[in-house]
Image (cartoon, rainbow, N blue to C red):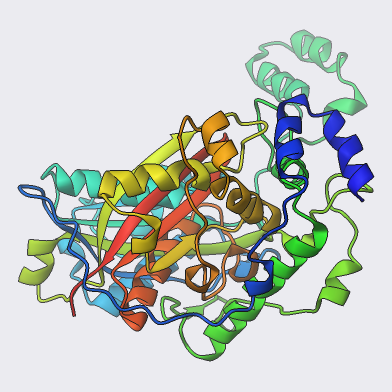
Length: 475
């Protein structure tokens, strides 16, 4: 296998330096993958800043995240978003007229409801006087929705904003080919029979070939899975390590589900079907079964498979964000403060999925914290190889000095504080909705374990990334 990876890496000049550096290194924490989570207590200082509004999460919910093609397959995205909004209203009893603004993230838009936030809000019974807009930033679209809400409240424009996200991978737009679209538009403009016949004479059967959407980079024409495979190879992350990490994610998610820890889930009565009450992608397996799967992207020698990748997911989430003084005036006990956040961007080819590595030190420095101050880490798991490659990069002085312009490494998140209730590999990853899940999981973990600071981080298409500090609200 080593010779195979070496051969593969010879075709990747920009990553070969990484391979040479990391080829003799193994994941030092591999043996800790099943370590029991440690309860954290803390009496650290607050991150409140003078003359800056404190912004709080009152509550956040999500409908169950489901494998695409299952119970949500006959719905539309705004149906899922509406269900999340309705669940938030039911749980918080917030009067609809108190909400000043609504923001939703999404990635693959349904053309009939391009501003899905607005359509979902109207469907959930919000006033037509409540503005709403939709943002897209790939896998960090919900993160952008939340931080946009933070900005609006911090600027004093609003006091109460709902942020969320939605994705329906069961039904994505499939277009006619460009040639067919052009012909149809031209036919619509043609005024005479002769003009129409002339246009039709140019028709060819290949015009009927559809354009299928793909999770691929426009700038590189490479799928994210392919990038993950190359990244894992560049950092010498083995297939076994990836499968071990994926199994950890599923086992922890199953444990959290069985113990009722996934309390952000609200049931959803699917029209014409039963009520959905839990995620259906949590499927603990065995390393032996996982090892039987063939590579999904780089064949036959790749290490990324269906078992160690996040799956196509349908789902939606929604979060009630307020100025602290407004929340208290309305009688709410917030769950957490939303503190410092950063967005980063780097090379979309060879560093596509390294957003957490670049964002983590920046947000920690901005907040005046260190890795040791963090009680709960919640990172988006696009692929096992992506998480483990980030671990390698974060734990490397060489990478920090040569690629990040830093003197020392970021540091490795301790696994006993990392994604303790599962992650995107097991819970699912509706592209536009995951950010809210990450923040709410961090907040709920802090409340349960007595910690104070959570760090949320995620990579995204385009080589972008996000990180945010969540601070537990005093009990």
